[in-house]
Structure formats: C-alpha cells, structure tokens
Amino acid sequence: MESLASTSRPLRIAIIGAGPAGLYAAEALLKQRDIVLKIDLFNHFPTPFGLVRYGVAPDHQSIKAVTRVFDRVLADLRVRFFGNVTYGADIHHQDLKQFYDQIIYAIGAQADRRMGISGEDLPNSLSATAFVGWYNGHPDYRNLSVDLSCERAIVVGNGNVAMDVARMLVISPDVLAKTDIADHALEKLRASKVREVVVLGRRGPVQSSFTNPELKELGKLAGVDVIVNPRDLELDPISMSALEGNHAALANLKCLHQYADYSERSAPRRITLRFLVSPVEIIGKDGGVAAVRIVQNELVADANGVLRAQACGESEICEAGLVLRSVGYRCLPIEGVPFDHATSTMSNSTGRIVDPTTGEAVPGEYVVGWAKRGPSGLIGNNKPDSVATVEAMMADLPQLQGIHDEHRDLARIEALLRGRGIDYVTYHDWKALDQYELAYGARRQCPRVKVTTVADMMAIIRHG
Ligand code: NAP
Image (cartoon, rainbow, N blue to C red; front, side, top):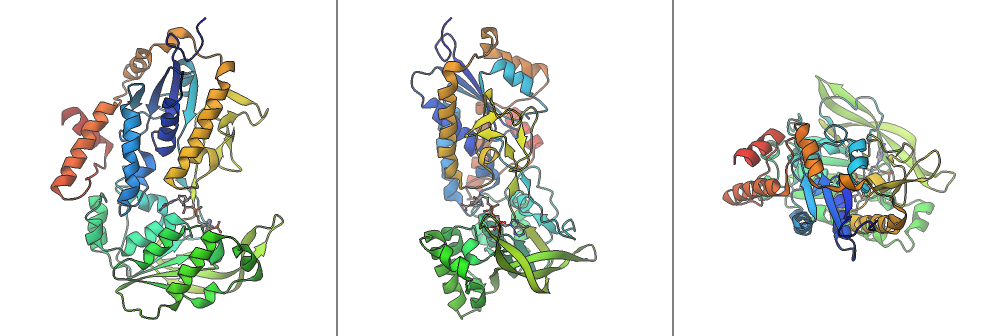
C-alpha cells in the first residue's frame, strides 16, 4: 500500500477552530516538505480569526494585521474552510475519526473564571469576556445589557484583559469611531458617564500579569490621569527579591512609580490602579451594582513558594455602578476529548491528546493554543506552540494507521454536512462577507463595520 501523506493517499487533517492557534497550526502543516495533505478547518461562526476578531481591543488595530498571514493560509488550495459548523452539534467526534487521519483541537478558552463572591451575578456585574465580546461585535454578546450611567466602574484583575477593558471605558469615543468597534458599543460609550475606573490587583505590582506596553499605554490616553498610591509600591522582602533580574516586573514598577509621582491631576477621567486588594462582596441596590466591599491583602508564600494573596486588616466600601471581572478565561470540555479539570485544559502531553486513565496518547488527536496550555500568552505566542504540536504530528506519522482510503474522498464531508442541512460557509463565502464589511467601513472611514448576527452574516453571504 502507498504510504500515508503521498499523492495517492493524501493526509487528511481536520482542525477544529479557525482562531490564531488553529491557523498557525495550518500554516506550519502547509510548510511541511514531502507531505501531501488536505486540511479542513471547521469553525463555529461564519467568520474566521477567533480572538483576533472578537478579543483584540478595537484600538489595537495593528495586532489585527496578522489576519493577512491567516488569509494566505485560508486561500491555500490545500485548505478548505467550513464556517458556521459547530463541533458537537453539526459535526461529531465519530465523523472526524471516520474522515480524518489527524485532528487538531484549537477551540480556545471561551468561558470566564468566576470570583465566587456574593453579588457576582447582579445586573451590571459582568465578565470581561462578555464585555470584550460586546464591544467587539461578538454575536453572543451583542445584546449584553451594559449600563454606563454610573461615575465609577471597578475592574477586578491585573492582566492585559483588565488593561483592555479599563482603557475602553475611558478612551475617547472619537478615537474608537476610527476603529472596528461595534456600533452598539460606540453609541453607549459616547453617552457613558463613567469618569473613574478602579483596577483591583489582588497581589502586588511585582506579581501583576499585565505587560509593560499595555501599562504604559494607559499613561498616553488623552484626557485620562493614571493614579497610583505610592504606598502600594512599597514592596515586602519576598517581592523585593523576586524583582532581581525580572526585567518585566522592573519595567512595570518603574512605570508605576512615574504614575505615582505625577502630581498634576486635572484630566476629566481617571484610571486608579490599586494593589493588594480583593473584592469580597458586590453590594446591590435598586436591581444593580451600588458598591464593592474590598479587603486589604498581604502576600503569603504557599508550600511551593508561590506568593498568594491573603486577606488581612479592615475592609472598605468602594462605591461603583459597574463591575467587570477580568480574572481569566477557562476552556470547557468538548465531546469525545479527555479533559483535565485540574488545569481546565484538554488532557495532553506536549500537544498529543492523552487518555488520563492510561497516560497513553490517543492516536491522531492533538491540541493547540489555550485549550492545550491554558489561557495565557499573546496572539503571537500561539505560533511556536502550534509549531510544536505539528512537529509531534509529523513525528507520529510513521506509526499512524490512518482512515480507510474510501473515506479520503474530499466530497464525502461536504455531502455529510449538506445531508444534515448545515449551511456551511466556504472561504469564498467568507471573502464576500469580508468585502462587505470592508466596503461598509470605507464609507464610514473606519477599517471595517462588523456584522454582528449570524443571520445577517448568512443573508449577506447568500443574497449579497
Ligand atoms: P491573566 O494574564 O492570567 O490575568 C488574570 C488576572 O486575574 C491576574 O492578575 C490574576 O491574579 C487575577 N485573578 C485571578 N483570579 C482572581 C480573583 N479571584 N480575584 C482577583 N483577581 C484574580 O489573564 P487575562 O488578563 O485574561 O489575559 C489572558 C491572556 O491574554 C494573557 O496572556 C494576556 O497577556 C493576553 N492578552 C494580551 C493582550 C495584549 O497583548 N494587549 C490583551 C488581552 C489579553 P493572580 O496573578 O493573583 O492570579
């Protein structure tokens, strides 16, 4: 028999998820020499690019330039895009096992972590996941109820998502009007009464996870003061020693000192960065958020030497009408794939899906991105991560049995989807929608105007 990945037996690969991790994996596969392959990319929404479209903040347009690389991948004749196809509903694990030699799960981490405090589910106490989706025109969040009639908002968390949402609440709407922000969000932000955003970090400045460019960016926002209390920058001995050689933390600390030293505070809006504080209760009034009870923390080393926040001292009440919890994302289990609940990732060893009971690799199944390593890293960090998984896939090829050759026919999967009444979106279809959004944007002098419902997307694709 001809060997797998040859002209007569092209390797059939399915990638679930057309976000950055899935597309970087496809790119790495296309670069393999002496391998004949066909890749099918399945995606829940008709639109590709995952977090680049629905996660990256609208005022960070330059990060979205990576879609040019991804577009080349999608345009490759060895790749087919199947948008508007949901894994677990429209296509199943057993289908993939039947039609593909190798499967890559690139589903990301769509759910949000919770704080587990009272009042968390009050109206206007929202996850950053939902708020980010709302301003980015994500179909699931376009109808999110966001009330910006309060003067103070509280953001919980000290990562880059916290920086994004804090910035979005105070940045000039005129700046946002030149971006691809969703219309409904721009309209609300124009009428916003929010004047102060208080960002709560449960640990100290040395332990914060935001990166330096994002921290510095706050200080460059027109009409915004950044307030830091110098007392919050007094470090305990363990944090002091953790600073040694830690260039990222040193750069952040320097920037925070500059904010703390800056005495002229006359801007109409402000971001206040607080450290070593945790929310312990969200207090409601009249069916909304009225305030947050905050407790002071100290850092305590756990058995592994990791510094944890531990409540100490008195609590205080901070009045606020909006709370955004930005405490990280979470991957959810999907049909047919073992899940590690301790790490909230798919059970894997360097990208190979493993059976947790035996520790053995599941032949032909792989994972990339946040579903593989957890929700951390910038868009570009997905590239080496996906390349590493593809290297494992290539190393496994000689032992791979592969599917029946009669299932290698490319038309089989199209017939299966059509037979199930799935109105799947091809690359050509996506390009029609893309052109529509770009042309609309050109008329409005912004990069694009996103279509925010799947029904509207499909109507534009099918009827122009
Ligand atoms: P993250 O970097 O993991 O930050 C999560 C933050 O939430 C941490 O400060 C964490 O504090 C805090 N936290 C967790 N549980 C908490 C609790 N119960 N109470 C209070 N605070 C809590 O996650 P992220 O901000 O969601 O970002 C995800 C990834 O996307 C990151 O790698 C980020 O760099 C990346 N990203 C990048 C950009 C950009 O490049 N501009 C934009 C957005 C996102 P502890 O440290 O104490 O756990």
